Image (cartoon, rainbow, N blue to C red; front, side, top):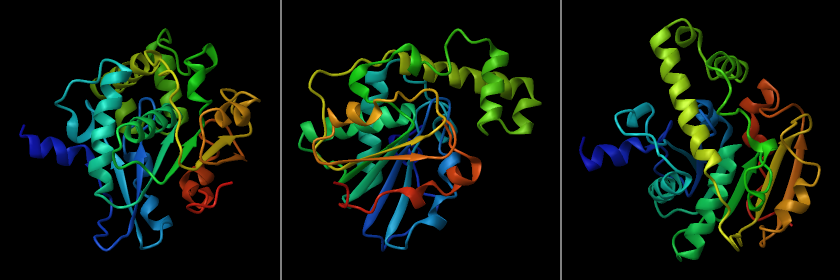
Length: 255
């Protein structure tokens, strides 16, 4: 596969908007891909284009090996984010493990003087400077295959045609386990923080989120912080998830 094809496969644009002046770049969560975000263009104004980062080992990059460590995936994601933004101002979003990845990528880009996001929005994750705790290990590497399939079904990651096909189900489990290994390899980088405004979203019934989530994120968000509790659990409610961008803070209005 050529380098050009790999580059194209790493960024998915569900609806091309060449006249857009802003990009919403989204990073996937553990076991996920770009699919859960693909309907979001209808929720964005015409000045914003949606760009979805595809991690190695899935979708258009299925011939590539999965990332083996957090460091490997973070460097891959940072390069993909820069391609996704295309020099426009952009907002970087991530959910769950993707929230930590979005923070880490934003911090790395700022440290390097690269094209960093003007706004960071993270969803369903505790502050990254804590590292991975037992509370964050959801799902867990020791979970049986059946439990992982059940979890994927519960959050809408397991279409019926996948669940009913042993080979496809095995591939879904392999992807999930690869992402869990990467997540569990995460180690906070000393002093990592970001200077752009940060919004934290979380479900009021999400057992992963600690009560001190706002104070935790304030330690690493040095450009302003907004924290919003929404109905539901780790993936909110289905209607809320489908309309999640409606809850994103207007750009440059966090305080």
